Length: 304
Image 1 (cartoon, helix red, strand yellow):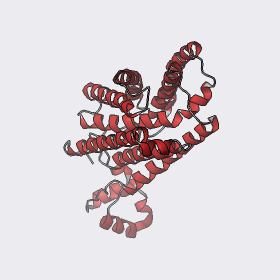
Image 2: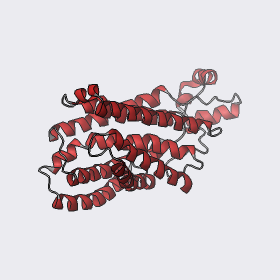
Image 3: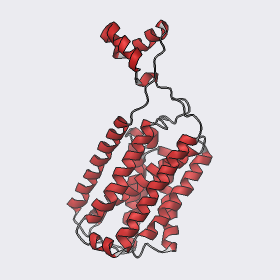
Image 4: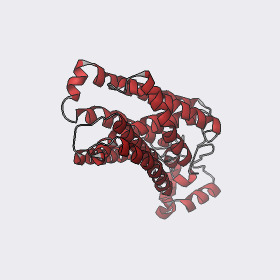
């Protein structure tokens, strides 16, 4: 079904802005209030109280909802892995690795692999929030979604939102200078996503640049390498499960089958309905068929 008017993607953008605003508020609570700081002091509470729910579960549900409403395909939104993700990850490793090598040589940290592992969940959450949710919603709300204007606006909005988000973090990140500087750091991450449509590639580049930032500021994180990788694995599982459940629960509206014999014959030839004989055809005429091959998707960003 084609997008009818711009109100539907605009509502999606409003939802995305609301999600990011709630994430801002939650991070302020955890980093700048007494109760939040006491919660953060207990082991991995920050990961389970903020990054996983607000940075993985909610974005997965939102992206799944966008797919189910047929605003765009999962591949275009970056939620389905393909060969492009491998190419984007390779480009991210080349660029990020070059930056990280220089930074780690000049500002050595004891165990860069442990820091990399501990930043996996946070970096993934940032990409899902500011590109998977806000970036995609912005691009879909500005016609045409594949146009350079929508891409440029997405780059600006995502970078500003990411940079200003650091005002919700503790010292040394919560200064306007750091926020604006990190907004510029986010530009290559956004560009990589806009070119490749790969959230995975953006995550890889974001992690490597985060390692560089922590190394330059001589900041260590509590936790073990194994814990970081286990949390990252949990984040991946949560994203896949929530995304799958959301797309299934909010399935596309059925396309009703016209009752002419010719159309029934065409539809039947494309679906397993014909295998069930006349009874299956009659049931299809009464309830509608949701076969993907009959979905009308004009104007919807699909696989490039």
